[in-house]
Length: 269
Figure 1: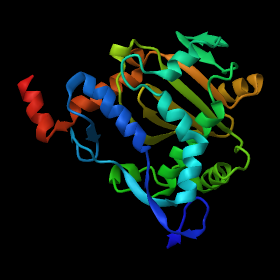
Figure 2: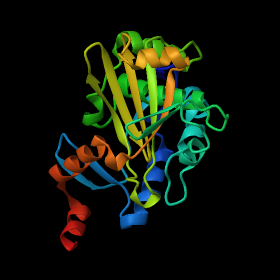
Figure 3: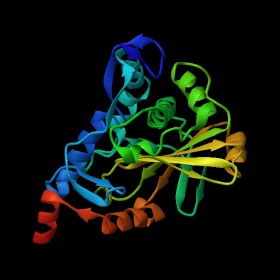
Figure 4: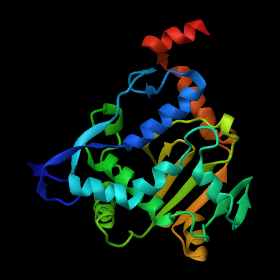
């Protein structure tokens, strides 16, 4: 018995995933369409990447809180990410909506038709950021994010995940890849954070979807937009391959060393 990090009750803990197990399956299924090799795991700390079935876990939550996370967001969100050719439910749903405006080729939406469960997307995103910030994870690279939310927001988000109100000065953008199925890069990334002038920018990816969270005192432009549209969550249709994130991903892949079977595959190409 030990204390559950979410409900703070003394209970038997489960071996909790940082990124839901179903996302690993989505990456494996989608990526295997291209090379048949399964998941490639890259680590910037060790400057390496290799094929692996490794999944980042930690004894963090009790069974009841694991179920809370599944019912609160995972069960809605994870089936809708990119899972292979013609298998991208969220993109199909977002195309039914009418954009509120377009900026630099990116369509911005506040879903109105009820096809997209926006509350589930907010809950899912905050649950991943929170567990990355509060947990002691097996992978040292992931642990660099520990306490990234800060004491105040880490506690406020914990209470939100238990059913209390959403914290103030917190805004989420859900980016949906508009590239053709054959051009979508089926990858996931663990939460990372960048400090801006008066707020913090938190990011993680699942296949075809990027979660971008701004936390802090009235980030310029976003705060006003949220006030005007009375929403703390926006969905954005964009081309990942035309975004700077893609060039950064390419750079990261080129600068790490392939190991094991992945290195052998590279030599044969």
